[in-house]
Image (tube, rainbow, N blue to C red; front, side, top):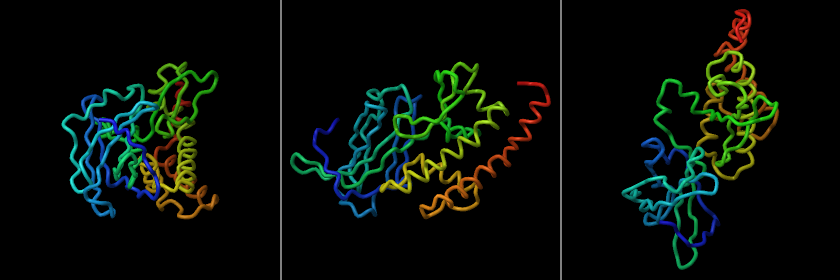
Length: 254
């Protein structure tokens, strides 16, 4: 199933996140993918491959051609490390001799899961993980797919549950998480020649809904900060973070 050819990345095209839909099924054991690659100026008969990966583990599945993306009969994830969130790449290649030329790429595609359809869909946007942080309460770290995720000190009882349900944790942590993440995504999109990956796109859309305006089209730091501040202010107001914090403290509950 693996391709042993070397890949030439020269002059590759970008596959937008809106042309790729991938979902995890059967408790993370398998996946499904729907691709729409027609209209990108690619050869109709160019081979397509989908690659699930996590850290140093990955698999590669042939998916037919640009004209007719056809999945293999069994899309299992048995060779991908189950220790974290799997991401996906979609590649269109031109295979000639010993060198395979990369014609188009979509990278860092986040799959959807059955949990993403739950009412509490906001949690799927922010990945939360616990680990020993010494005397730090929380920090933002990158996962294997270069996404930002919230890491909470596992010494705190029920740490992950606290960020989801405790008004104190939410008021003191979430606004800064939102601020740092949006600024990071804006910087990445401003410097990266590729189109934003799926997780960056989700955050930008979330910020746009909150701020009431699309993200700045320029690289002016002042415009970025103004847009992010508007989004954080709207988020805090929408969830009444300060009010709920005061009510919780006034009630004498930690």
